[in-house]
Amino acid sequence: MREVDVAIVGGGIAGIVAATKLIESGKEVLVLDKSKSVGGRLATRRINGGKADHGAQFFTVRTEQFQQLVDRWEQNGWVSKWFGENHARYKSTDGMNQLVKHLASEVPVQLSFKVDRIERDGNSYVLVPEEGDDVKAHTVLLTPPAPQSLQLLQASDSQLSNYAHHSLNRIVFDPALVGLVSLKEGASTKLPNSGHQDSDLPEGIERIVDSSSKGISTERIISIYATSELSKFLYSEEDELILRELISRVSHIIHSEHVSSSQLKRWRYAQAEQVHSSPTLWVSEHESIVVAGDAFLRSDDQSGRTRIESAVLSGLTAANEINDGMERKASL
Ligand SMILES: Cc1cc2nc3c(=O)[nH]c(=O)nc-3n(C[C@H](O)[C@H](O)[C@H](O)COP(=O)(O)OP(=O)(O)OC[C@H]3O[C@@H](n4cnc5c(N)ncnc54)[C@H](O)[C@@H]3O)c2cc1C
Image 1 (cartoon, helix red, strand yellow):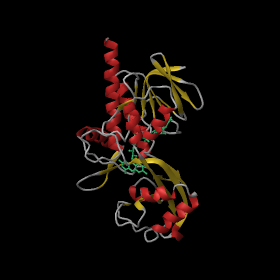
Image 2 (cartoon, helix red, strand yellow):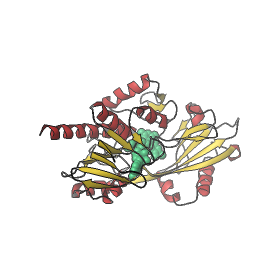
Image 3 (cartoon, protein in one colour):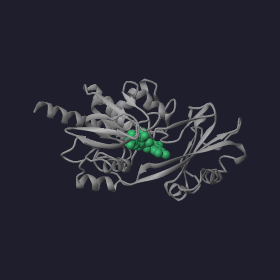
Image 4 (cartoon, helix red, strand yellow):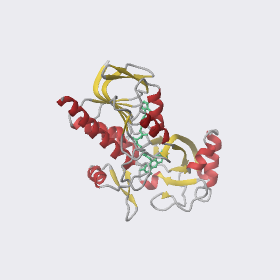
């Protein structure tokens, strides 16, 4: 069985920045993700030789700490300012997923590893996957969307304090439906030059993005985001019906006769409507398991919203707290 200092469940941006920080301070780390790629909700899909982002489209920066990281990413050519004069929206230059792939290039990651439960083994933990070999760790960091972390903890034999249980239970995520629509060659749209529109849209539509104008695709693929209300309303319907509904609602921007193909992405947990007002949550004073991710906001976070910045800051704080805890134990 592989044994590490810290096992991190989730290879989204929170898990990957936490792993990087822990590796820098000499910890042996392994990131476990159920998907075939790192990135989580920074997601990019390849379609007919083109590609389109279908999770987060951009990020904003509100803190000096995040700005310093973003400046480094910009110098590396991984991100660039996309639009927004006073309040820049940054995009990843090759699709949002690629940013996390760059960040994860030096991080040990095991993909297609869905953690089914966590068992206690003396002072360590055994992470049991749906398939494959167990992994043993002294400390566990959970970064899936908070409701999924709660489900995992409830399936495990770790002690969850009343406070942690109550706090995790309060975090509610909305779903999101995103239609990915490929246009025929030469077809145009009535979108701004940036390719991004999130105002003056029909009811039920939150945002429309043209991946070709965004500069990440040679093929013109349009991502149509339903609002959380419409996503909840349509979530259990068939793909075909949802796509027809999304395309018909934006027919003044995209002509349906210009559509060559379409596919749907469903996010059961997209963005939290209720967040936790601390960047981490330890499951109890008796356990070395900490929960983090985008729904864990710093108490001074003015936006109150789950976003890429909140995920990064939460991941970094979790790494610092794990380091401090391990150093304290080592000095006893
Ligand atoms: C449609 C949509 C639009 C968005 N738009 C924006 C935007 O414009 N700007 C912005 O800043 N933010 C946006 N966001 C939010 C942003 O994407 C997230 O805040 C951020 O990516 C969260 O990162 P994370 O690492 O906390 O979680 P995630 O990216 O969700 O990573 C969690 C990882 O855990 C893995 N996992 C879950 N359960 C298990 C398990 N049992 N075992 C192993 N692995 C597991 C998952 O596969 C996933 O990779 C959007 C999100 C969505 C879905």
